[in-house]
Amino acid sequence: MTIPAKAGIQPQIPLDSSFRWNDASSTHFFNVQKKIHPLIYGKHPFNLFFEKKMPQAPVLVSELVSENAQALRLRVQAGHQGLNREIMDKDINRPGLLLAGFKEQFPHNRVQLIGDSETLYLDSLTAEERSTSIKRLLDLDIPCVVVTGKNQLLPEMIGLANERNVPLITSNRSTSDVAFLFTNYLGLRFAPRDSIHGTLVDVYGTGLLLIGRAGIGKSEIALDLVERGHRLVADDIVDLTVKPPDILIGSGPELLKHFIEIRGVGVINVREIFGVRAIRLQKRIETVVELKDWEETQDYERLGLTEHFTQYLGIKIPLISLPIYPGKNITVIAEAIALNLHLKIYGYHAAQDLNRKLLKSLKTRREINEYLKWDNE
Image 1 (tube, rainbow, N blue to C red):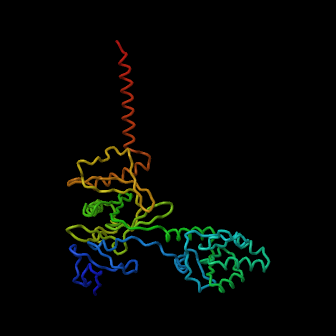
Image 2: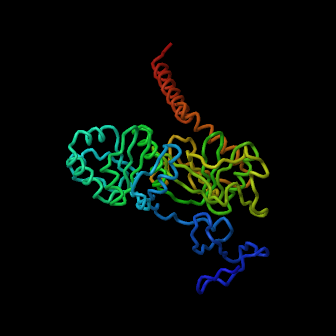
Image 3: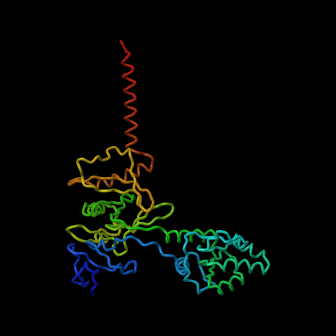
C-alpha cells in the first residue's frame, strides 16, 4: 500500500511489512482511531496522533437513544424518521412554560423533557387546548421529546410526532434520574478536548503531567516510576478533556495506549512487560511538572511559598518548574511532589510551616535582644 506524498514535500512511502519509522524523513499514516484520513507528518510514530482537536460534533438523537437505552430503558414510540436530528446543547429543557403559551427565548436546540408537572398540565386542558399546546412544541425545530416515569403518551402527541418526524421517546425512570443521566452523558460528549505533548503518570494516586522539550527524559522518568510501582496513563501524546465540575482528565490515544517510546531502545508495551498493575486508562491531572535544562543564571524556586499555575482548556493546574541535569534523581523528586500534594490537601504546607517557624524565631530573638538591651545586672 502506498500513500501519495504531500505535494512538493514528501516522496511516496510504502506501508508494508518492510516499512520502518525513520527519523531522517517524515512519515505518513492514517488516523484510524477517529475514522478520518488526513495525512499527518511527524518525526516518529507517536507524533502521528498529535493534532489539534476539532470542535465537538453534534450528538444525534439515535446516539443518545442507543448509548443510554439500557440505563434509562429508552424506547422510541414515534417519529422514527427523525432519529438523525442533531442535539446542539448539553443541557436539557422542561417545556412547561412553552406548553402554557410563553415562547420567548425558548431553547429549542435542547432535549425536551416532559415529566409529571407537564403531563398534569396537559391533562387539565380541553382536547382542543391540549392539541394546540402540543403543536406549539412540536412545530419548533427541537431534537426530540422524552416522556418520563409512568406518564402515558397522549394520542395527539404521537400523531403530531409522526407527522413532523420528531422522535418521541419514553423512559420508565423518574424525571430526575433521566435529567441527571442525560446531563452527564451530554456533558461528556460536548466537553472541550485537546491534545498536548507530554507524559501522564499516576504517582501515589496523583496525576502528574510531565512536560518539556523533546528528548529531555519524560518517557524515561515515566518508565522508572512504573518500575517503582506507579502507573502509566499516556506517553508523548496526552488527550485532555474536562469533566464537571472543572476536572481536567488525561488519557492516551486509543492506538497508543500502554506504549512508551525510549530513545535508543524503541517502543515498548508497558502492560505486556509490567502487567495490568502498571497502567490505567485515564487520570485526573493534578500537577504539571515542567522539566527544564539546568541554567546557572536562572533563579529557581527554593522555598515553595510562591505557587505557580498553568491552564489547559480553561482549568487552572499547579505548575512546578523542575531543573534537571545528569545524575539528578527526578523519579524520587516526582514521588515527593505527589506526596507533598497529599499533605497540602490534608492541610499541611511545608514551606508555610517553615516560614511560620522562622518568623516566630525572629520575633523571639528580637524580644530577647530587647530585654537584654536594658538589662544592667
